[in-house]
Image 1 (cartoon, rainbow, N blue to C red):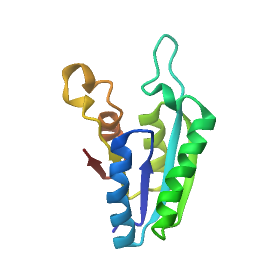
Image 2 (cartoon, one colour):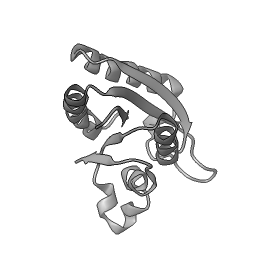
Image 3 (tube, rainbow, N blue to C red):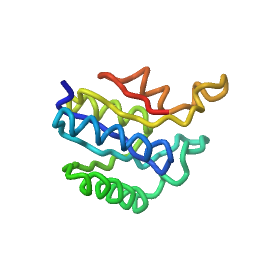
Length: 136
């Protein structure tokens, strides 16, 4: 059912909590797992969503740490580091790799009127070419 699972990771607690769901899904369906992290490039005059995600070195380290979590569970994970706006980049990659599922953590910022337009998870929900599992 879920041949290819895409799991975007960042430094959030919600992403770490979503990893448990990813482990369960990948083991259950014997899925291919792709971890992606996006080096954020903010538009001119706009602040990045997550300033900690603007460093290529920090993103590389994050991907290696995330990969080791899955390796400890006996899961082979591929890693990809991309650059751009997180929501658009993640959805483009999901389309490119023909992902069957995207699993994302959600910080809940999209639940407010102000946060709805800024929420990366909300944008992914609206742009995704495949089903999404949102882990609160």
